[in-house]
Each structure stands twice: as C-alpha cells, then as structure tokens.
Length: 393
Image (cartoon, rainbow, N blue to C red; front, side, top):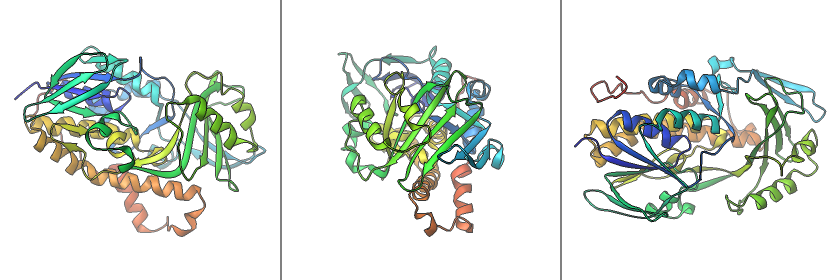
C-alpha cells in the first residue's frame, strides 16, 4: 500500500515535523490544531546531539539558524545582579547549558509550518471529538462537524494530549508531575539585555526568575519557576495561572516586580507544570503518539524538541519501510526511540533534583553520568532510509 491518508493532531513542533516526513514518504497528510492559528512565543527550545542531524536531513538547518535567538551565553546572578557563573553557547560543542541552536518554540513552529503548508492540509480551530478504528482504518469526527476516514492517526498534541486521553486513558495514568512549575512570556527589553541570558535562583525557596534575549532586541523573554508539590490549575485558565504566578513570586527580589508588571500586557503568556509522560507503549492499532504526548521528558531535560524531531523522522521512516503497516511500523519506531527517550527522561529528573537541593546525593562526576549524557545526546542511530520514496530527491 502507498500514499495512506494520515491525520496528525497538533501543529506545534512534533506534528508539523512528522507531516514533513510523511509527505516526503508519499503520504496524504492532514494536521488538525485546536488553536485558531499558530501560537507565538513560548520558551526557548534547543536542538542538540543527534537532533541536529535530523534537522539537516529535513533541509531546514539554515532556516532554523536564521530564526534562532542567537544567545551568546548565560550569567547566573545574585539578588543585586552580580555575576556568579558564566556559560557560553559554544561550551561542550554547542550542546551545553546554552545550546548553539536555540530558538523560541513559536518561531520553530512557524519554520515547520512554512515548510509544509503547501503540501499538507492544515485545519486550525478544530479538533477530534470522536474516533473509531477497525482493521482497515480510523473513522474520525471533528468538532466542526466533518467526518473522515484515515488509514493512520497520530497524536502530537502535547503534554495534555486529548487524543491520548481518548484512546489510551486518562492523563493521570501517564503524567508524572516533577514538583516544579514554569512560566514564560515576552516583556519590553527595559533591562538592557544584549545577547546574554540572566538567571536568578533563590536557594532558600527553590524559586527562580530570568530574562532571555530574543531576535527582537526591543523585547525579552521572562522566565519563572517555583516548586509545587501538586498542580491543580487548568492549563487553559490563564487568569488563574497569572494569579498563581503573582502569589508564588511575591518577595523574590532581583528584577521580579518589574517583570511581573508586564504580566497583563503580554501577548504570549504560558504557565504549566514540569511533568513527564511515561507509557508502556505509544501505539494501539492504527493510532500512535509522538513528542510530548507520548514521552515528554519535561523542559528541564532540554530535549523535548530533539525528541520530537528525531521521533518524527523515525516514525515516518519506519512506517514507510513497513509499507505503511501500522503494527510493524509502530514497533520499529518504538524499538529505536525508547532507549533515547529514557535517557533524556532521566536527565530531566536529575535536573529537577539539582534545583531542589538534593544534588548532593548525585555523583555527577561518575562514569555513569558521562554515559547517560552520551545516550541522551546521541543515543539513537538514524537509519538513512535510502531505499524509501523521498519527494525531496
């Protein structure tokens, strides 16, 4: 069988990246996105290790580099703004604390959309309300009333995946809250930021505040984090999230009050828990998951974008290599991806521990940690799939 109809839920990063590869392999792709348009802003995301190779194979390396934040490095500072430590973007071969390829999530999403929109159907402001699968395909009903049949359906709709909940079960079964909450939003650059990130951490409370440069030098990205044993705020209730952020940041010091003064003016506020998604399997029948919907490693891993890009390449490649047979294709995808995912999830958990004061229990100088870093950066070998159809050739 060739040229199957594939529905992808989610148009952030994993979904359009998968659409790119599915289209190149000959599939007819539709991407459905609940939001009315691409979401701007968001946290800075990184491309490290083997994900750089995945980006090169997409032919998008130059476009992504042109849109990156171009952050020179990072300073950790005390409450008075004095520099404590310095990190540079070229540390560790560009795969360090500040990655060589660092781009705002919204900007990367735009690059991927621009690359795919001519060959892929996008349905914005819509979502899946019902789906039923049988041996030959999946019948899908959309909120807008349309009903269609697809050979394959892939959920790439993020940490709070609605598709995962419909097909695999409630999110509580798979979501692992790591005890931390993050917030991001853009503010006017009234802080003199010039290509250097500023990071203030309060060891007494476990809270942090920061400012990150972006391509528009008149703006900056504000960053906050605070510990929270649980997280009950609806991920779509922005007003409740803003109230929570103000409450938790009270008295933090540094530039916190000046940054919070812009909270109601920002166009791209985001707040959510730091969490991982842990599943025994990422597919059932003709439905599979990709990216944060399947294996979120949390923002603390620094690997969410890399996992999405590598996963998209492997999922499309393994499906096409199996002549679009879902059982064989999904099995190949999971076999190749799972060790890479598990290494990055471990990095994410260790990073949270290092911020909550329990790093003294971790031997970061041990050979085991060096091995873990190697597996997290390059722990999957990308097949070349040279024998497969490729519309880009």
